[in-house]
Image (cartoon, rainbow, N blue to C red; front, side, top):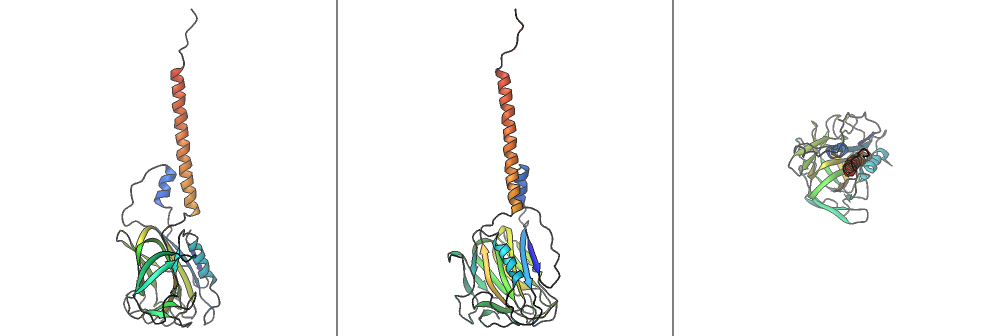
Length: 288
């Protein structure tokens, strides 16, 4: 199920999503035609930690909890932690998303739409800091909606997530609003407005956002649609996956659909056998 956790800011309303069409079709024992090209269901996972005082936080439990819930949906996750890059490296960057056992799961390229992004190692509560290791991607919000990053994946993926740190510390409240855009394999672009805090300019904020799509996508782009610029933000631990583990509700629907189909088949088979036995039985005649 979608996860949203927030330590300080009020929760942003989010439209509810129904179960996937495939699960509904199996549950009903029906075959459904393919959905329209633009139809897609996004399952978001979001958590943020807004500290009470300025400074780099010692922990960010709500952001980490969102990542844990997101990871539980991923059968073959791979993460790019930026540790293979040098400080001040600029885009384009060749990314390697690696599994916990260090196998390469996916590759891609990070592009910078602003021209101001680079690999950073400095830990600065006001302008970004790493989550794991020492290196992370840092960029500055532009005056237009140019991308803070754009990742082109070499193969279609079904999930993408990342950490962000220190947003809206160099701008006024409400001037930074990050939107993640996913370009589907069919060419459609789907936006997701990240429900992060927009009321506070305190330093040391951390959020994690992960999105699972029922349709594969080939590109992930992050933009600022707020009306401010000059906000410096850090990004770390980009994670992708190709294969999604069904949610418990979806699994029950699938299982229920298969059981219903099996029960219907057994009833039909019993009726067929009963008719066959009746047809073979000799007709009764009175004694002569």
